[in-house]
Length: 321
Ligand code: F6P
Image (cartoon, rainbow, N blue to C red):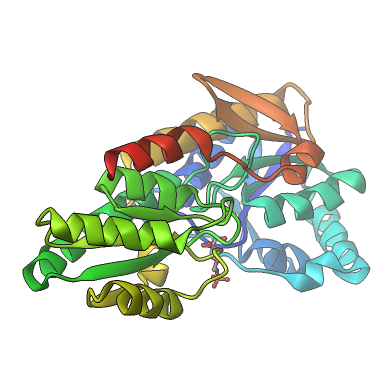
């Protein structure tokens, strides 16, 4: 009997999810396994919104943002009743294993299934890059690139008016998007949830820049920082006298065609997931660390949130004097 696997995307969509689904489907078929697409994340798993995929089911999606499988946040799946409904459908469709493409919440769902005896492999995809066990998650690079492009536009207009701009980017618990994009775009100050902020230092930088003839400043903050974007802008404007605007790109940063880096990551991680399943290994989340592929127990993957502020933080502080 051929092994039959199901693939779903769950949680917030991320650019590169489609590339990952494509690679899971094609990789499974190459390895003589049957593969089913599960629509709407765990919602579709509970309701049986599942269909068998062939090679052409995933044609023409590699370059598209979002997810052709659709996605959902699914509180009902976290109940005993929801889990049982999912188990019934897994049996009905004869699925031997599941590949879950998503972030930590999605992996938690996968872990509940694994504990009930379903073979699960997790592929990390979230623009937040908040999983500690992997250096990168699918979607992060594209979102960071979208943000630096927006920051370039903001610079043009802010410099023309002699303004400062506070930009709030996504990242509920993790400041990686703010930190990476902020450093890459030369933001004057970067505020992330992992660190305490010092508004005096932010103001001093704005004023010192103005004194040197700098025409604009960008202050980038992650959404998880416990000071609202409007409130922050008001404080900075009051204290410095520099007109300060706000920009919240919101979902603009979550869409868009995936970058090369995200497409390659999707291909590599899907390859790794399929290889593990072929070898009969499950209950793992795949990722990258240093230059290589890694896999860790799902339990470990969901237990640690990224806490990394040192290196880029220091460099950003030096370069934005
Ligand atoms: O999980 C990724 C993320 O982009 C977070 O940074 C953000 O807070 C959240 O999704 C918003 O998602 P939604 O509004 O779609 O539930």
